[in-house]
Image (cartoon, rainbow, N blue to C red; front, top):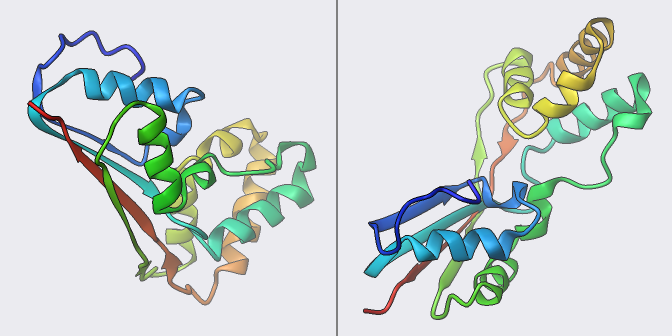
Length: 167
């Protein structure tokens, strides 16, 4: 993702959805995405907003702390870009001017505790799950499912930013 190999000015639109925060040098990635954009093209970047995946995220980290405290992270990578101002600051640091950003608070219904576990497996939490031994993983899954038995909705706030490359 950091060195895609496409030529300069190759695309009318470049979109990065829920991924830029996984890269250590986010401004460098934003510059790479911008480089591939034709004049008049649009860059769109989406990140998670504050309290994404709650209350399941807390249930997950609480379960991991009981089973393998050494795997508990002190932050989520997406927390670095959880507001429009933070995302605009990143784009500005990459030399991308005239960007706009907006927050969209939202919640998603969750059908049951199994859905909560599926969410954990389909997000950035998966690396922690994969670091667990099979018995540990089973205990964490059991605890997450128990904590989410009432299937509360999942917070799914997003921050959307876009910028048009001048031609």
